[in-house]
Amino acid sequence: MFKIQTLNSIQPVWQSILTEDAYQVGSDIDNMDGIIVRSADMHELAVPESLLCVGRAGAGVNNIPVEEYAKKGIVVFNTPGANANAVKELVILGLLLSGRDVISGIRWADTLQGKGAEVPKLVEKGKSQFVGPEIQGKTLGVIGLGGIGGLVANTAVSLGMDVLGYDPFISVDNAWRLKREIKRVTDIDVLLSQSDFVSIHVPLTKDTKESFGAKQFASLKQGAVILNFSRGEIVDNTSLLQALAENKVRRYITDFPNDTLIGKENVVCIPHLGASTPESENNCVTMVANELDAYLQSGSIQNSVNYPDCPLPPVSGKRLTVLHANIPNMVGQVTSELAKASINIASMVNKSRGLFAYTVLDLDQDVPSSTLDTLNALPDVYRVRLLG
Image 1: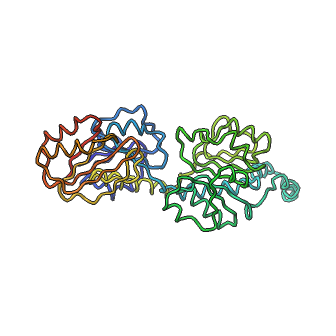
Image 2: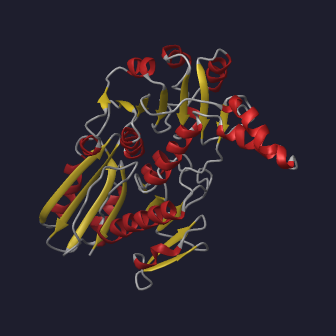
Image 3: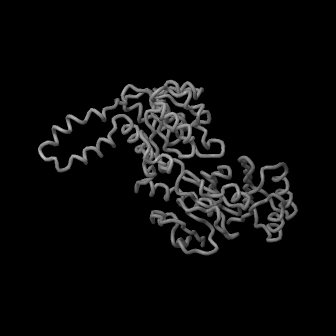
C-alpha cells in the first residue's frame, strides 16, 4: 500500500483514483511515498527517503525545490491546463474591466446611497468620468500561447478582437488548437508596438523574472493595457509605475497584488483568483491523482517538471526504473550490472531532460537485492525502483 500526504486542504475527488485498497491518504502521514500540495512552501520541509513523488495541484511550482528533489530521485508533477479555463475567464474579465472604469464607477455609485429620487439624475450627470473604449476591433497581443494563453487568444477572436500571438517555444499540440485568425509574430517588439492590450502568459523562472521591464515598455504602443495573470514578478514594478505615470500604460490589471501596486491609480489588483473555482480545483486534484497513481504503480511519467515525460503501459512482469544524471555511459553501467546477474532485458526506454534522465527496463526475471544495491550505489544514480 502506498501512502500519500496532503499538505493543503484537498477536495476528496481523488478517492476514485487513489482507492483505499491501494492507498492511504491524509494530512498526517509519516514515511510517505507521495505528496499532494497546492500552495504550501516545501523549500524548508524535511522529507523522508521514502518520498518518491510530489504532485502540485496547479501549474506553478515555485513553492517546490524542483532541482533539489530531482537529485534525491523525487519526481515532481504539475497539472498544466487543469485550471486553464478558470484563469482564461478571469483574464477576459480583466480585459473587459480595463476598458470602461467599471470598478471606480461601482464605488462611486455606492456613494449615492441615501440620495433618494436624486440618484437617477446624479448617475446621468456623473457617469461620463467612467467612460472607456470597447474591445471589439482592438488588437490583443498574447505573449505565451500555452494552455491559458491559447484559450485567451481564441476567446478574444470570438469577441471580435484582432489577435497577435508570440511564443517561440509553442508546442505542436498548442499550435493546432489556435484559431486561424490569430496572427503569429516572431518579434515581440512588433507585438508590443501594435497591441492595444497585452496579456502575459509565461512561467516564472530565473530568466523571466522582471523580464517585462523598461525595454518592453519602451516598445509598447502608447496607452496600451497590460494584463498579468501569469506571475507578478514577471513585470518590473519600477518600470511599470514609470510607464503609468507617463501614460504609456493606460491600465495595469493583475492577479498578484503587492504593496507597491495596491491603491495606485489605474492599477487593478485582483486577489489571486485565477484558479479559484471549484471546477478548477477538482480538475487539478483529479489530474495530479492520476499522475501519482501512474508513476507509483507503473513508473509512468506524464507532466513532470524535473524529469522527462515517459508514458508507460501497466507492468506485466518485472520493471526496473532508474532516475539518474543525464551523462554518458549511465545506461551502459545499468545494463552491465544486469548482465553480470544474467538478467535479460525484454525492452528498454531512455529519456532525458536537461540535467536529468530516466531509464526504464522491462525484464524477463526478478532482480536480486544485491544487484539493486549495486545499482543504487552507482555514482549519479538518484533512485532505483523494481516494480512488479
